[in-house]
Image (tube, rainbow, N blue to C red; front, side):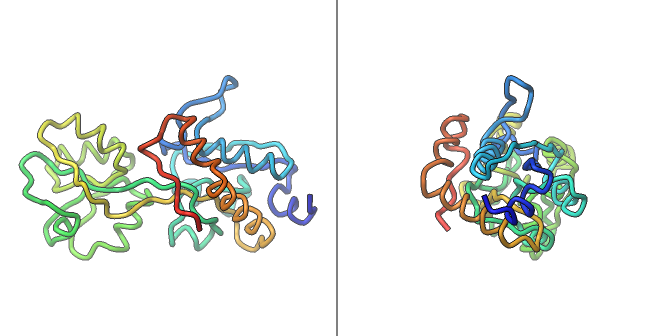
Length: 242
């Protein structure tokens, strides 16, 4: 293996992987040794195997915390959603999988489309610093976002404050819809949150290696196999080949 690549991607001799533990589709359980398991950790282990080094999984409460640690030398790669704000401090690979994001509407709502929700006076509950929140912050013109520190807290805000919509990942909203009789999930999505692998900027060999790994994993069927293996078929989709 190229020593310059190893120096850039695993300078300690171990591939340290920042994991977003809040993504319940990518982290679906734990191994027999108690380490996080799911599609995201499995991708990390596969990358480390190709690199020829051991892997160390570094858990974070959410994607924002992973991104915040980009300058702290605690991870070598970050498994989080690619997003323009995060791309200022992280070089991202193409996406390997994606999750649809949409709105849950309260009982009695007359809204019918994603576009109708972005109107003056409408308030949308959302988890702060989630990839879909960052997308909404960049794209909404009229509606107001009401931030919550967690996914569960965003649902509580939605119900307790009688907000006009709850933004979130479709699979989680399907679960939350069951908690609120009469609520309605929009069929259309406002974006797809694409999951990628990133490294710190200024490491061209590392970035190229990760890009090649992700492209091969998507085209060669590894991602599809992992989605099936971890039981998230129909909730997590393979990203289009870059």
